[in-house]
Image 1 (cartoon, rainbow, N blue to C red):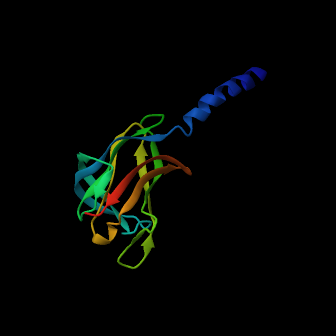
Image 2 (spheres, rainbow, N blue to C red):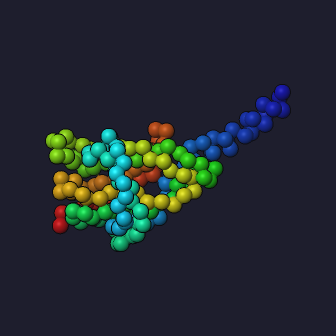
Image 3 (spheres, rainbow, N blue to C red):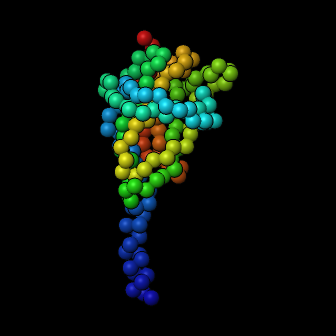
Length: 162
């Protein structure tokens, strides 16, 4: 019994490292292009939906985005953690500048939040598109990833007026 207890105690650091080791590594970021796909309901967002995007490409590497209707900005990232291939249920958050954005319903929104499935080991994309003029608020915008109450990654962009 004592041997088993010692063995378990020796394994604790390894077990602790495996849990909570997930993180996002940004590979490239800036202005991106992609083919718009279907709308996905997302009640925790200013628009009420997110849109799936296919065929992402980095157009220009930059952290400063000049606001323009139709412009898409974002990042390509790797989801690190073990075991590779495991699906995790994360929370994707977009933090708008301090004053937030005001949607057509007159609702001021400072944070968009929605669930996002990520697969450990995958390289994928996340972006934001200025579909409407009310979204184009200058200031710092941050795309964040959260898992079980802790931030596992983020990318900040500075939005400026044309």
